[in-house]
Length: 414
Image (cartoon, rainbow, N blue to C red; front, side):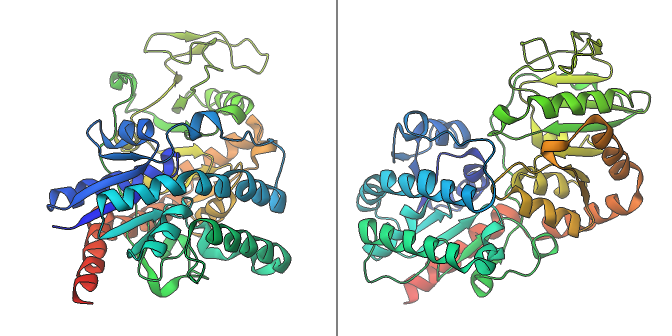
């Protein structure tokens, strides 16, 4: 059978969708290897994942700390100059070594790991793009030609260092196949890459279990709301989580909340509370007791199985959280922080499946009515269910594996 090499950045949200695709390919007899940070890949894909270190220590030692207040073009410049381009340079040798050693029939490169695409092109290996967020489809720089020209120049310089100097393909958009882990019912019509995009929806696969979750705590007689800021926003979330807690506790007569609180801002520093526990305060200076009958704060949750018990989700508009919630027909309150999150938040609202609040100005008085809207306005739930139907019909990991097999077949016939 064929060999597939997945090239991924050290970002959980970009690896998780490919875990299911890799498992599906292996179940069909294909061999799969990864190029990335071994500790992160094996934590998500399993301890037996075959990983070429590329690079081994970059995630912990060299990742830049982004100032929390930068926005717009300045944020884009930081993303490319301080993260994506240095990451590609750091990964290039490892990716090349992986391709030469593993000899894949196809490389699957995440959009934020352009070294995968550039090295594959240079070595003459067909490659597909993994698009774990639809942000690049929007061509947001079309209205900013100077910024677009700067971005194109960065990619040309990167190509000269690690790719084929004569190559012309945009490393974010394979000329052969772009796997989009969403659907047009949510993402809208793409401005770029349309004829190469295959809409597969979310790839939902078994993940490492979080610490024991107290399922008995959930009260089926009340609506339940999940609050989460994903895996990469703990540094920005303390004030927001406290405001959410205050808003949701004010509605304890009719709902309960599960809050993902990795830093322990709601739990007196412990970051966890089990059934029967109490909380010393909201973090807002009120000193109010946080009864575990109203709100459960835990450092991590088993998100996929938990979503089937949720009536609403409050989140940062991270793409994986959004599509996983909508896959379950759950409407959202979205409070985007940075990067692609404003784009995803706008898509949720345009689809009618949620309400947006401004993260920097989100208070309990603003969060509470937004939660009420998605819980009690039937239009939001109907829209969430409609998008969810499209996401489920797209096929997920199995559909992605089908498209990769078609690419492999085309290579053999060519």
